[in-house]
Image (cartoon, rainbow, N blue to C red):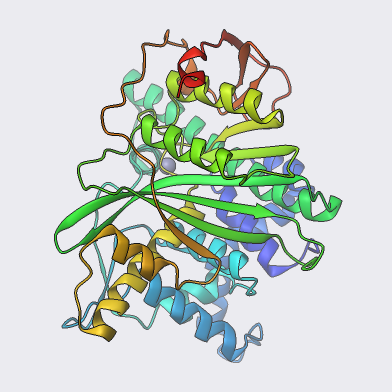
Length: 408
Ligand SMILES: [Zn+2]
């Protein structure tokens, strides 16, 4: 991707807002001026449009607009009986989801400005503020805009939110760069796995769904990584989205030869302290590493950000379920029927998750400082933790306790 490529500029602009210019310039290997330009792209572009109506626009194909509109239909559909779309995330998040959606489908994405002005702009959208708005990013903007001197408490909060933004950018950039490197180095033995939970609702019942998205290099399609979406749906609505669910699903994947032929596995998940950044999860992935005998690294996206691939897969699945019900005129009631619908989607498999409800994880010693960590690497006996994925020196080294997983 050339340095002046508008897509590259859009990415820099998207991930670098509010970060020190020099840091961004160094990380992306561009000049400081390029970072300034990337950040100001939208404003300048919008201003130019107002003052110079004949300005030459970037050429965009009809297919790209068509694709962007199908993206909206999948991710923020117009529900029958309404004449508007309901958007629960910020425009920035929606663009990030769109960006990944395009990458996964090998479709060239529209630039940010075009997406906002020409795709979102003409739509009738109701913005719903809910917990998908990131509290850290929200406070960052609020405190930065505040007039007058900040209190000590507010300054601490601002520092925390600032770190949050930097971590988000670092982890997101690491993920993008890793995929690019695999492609360039033609690493056929490297599998990238992103997993996250979603909830599938049918007839007022919720089922937990663990979505496992994978990327790998394939000689047959050398221009992009091959992507697959695998849904593991709870057989009962009472099954919770906990570490046990992850353990049972991954054990099933291991037994079925899912990871066969790979020597390197890079796992990514949400950094949420409830499901993934837990001592139970760290011990389990230590066991997975030993069991598979591979070089496995576990990376965490920053809390509230970065599971766009899974978000897009979840939205697509919900849309297909909805359409199937509409087209057949029959309601979908059971997990089996959901799975049948999922199996109709390209590159997607629907499976019943092998969960056992009575499972109780044993007590694991708390790893102090785990919340601030963004990468785990494993030896036969220990987990090493790193503040960021790009870091090479661990700041923590915790002893693993894996007997429980041997017995499953
Ligand atoms: Zn945030």
